[in-house]
Amino acid sequence: MEHLIDGLLQDFERGKMSRRQLIQSLALAAAAAAPGGTLLAQGAKAPSMIPAAKDPAPWKTVWLDHISYAVSDYRRSAAFYRDLMGWEIKNDEGSRQATLKIGDIGEIIIRNNRQGGDGATAAATGGSTPAVNATANTTAAGGQRGNAQPRPPLTGVINHVSWGVSPWDTDKVKAELERRGLNPRPDMVGQNFKSFHVFDPDGWDLQISNQTRENHDSSAD
Image (cartoon, rainbow, N blue to C red; front, side, top):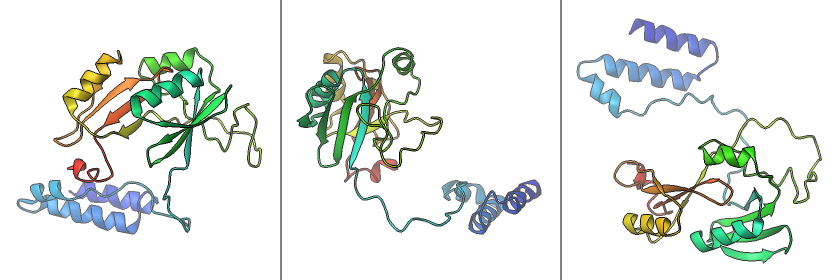
């Protein structure tokens, strides 16, 4: 117990946690040390190790405007997502890109901008690839937008995106994915979260789940 408290105090002194995080951690440690406290501590919410907020922006995200997805063949990928996910083709530029509506969530621009090879291989073997690119940085022709500053080295990638679909029946969804030759990989969490992973035509990890706006919070139980 003493070593635990010393460690928490050192983290606080080094700026690794805020005062609020320190108090929460000490309270949790005290609850665990008290008679019968282990069960109490297990039920308590662990303090976040994320640094405390500094100068938060005066807004909140309220809408997904669009995703820019760079692929090797935009026509093939647009048809894949239209047929499998029910996305509606809003417009088709005709040679390089198309915009699709994702239900009432937002839009996605699927564009020719990705070369086949190592990236696709990495995705097919379960690796992460930078398949989704910010349109603030790259245009369909590969040019710069915004302030045209050089792009920093890419060190973060989106591993996958999980899309909730409805209606959901686990067995029927699996059967439909198998019928399409997609080899679904189950990913189930608890009693309420059901999903499958498949690969799209470019080797991108696509997760299809039973999550909706109405049941999302309850599925975390």
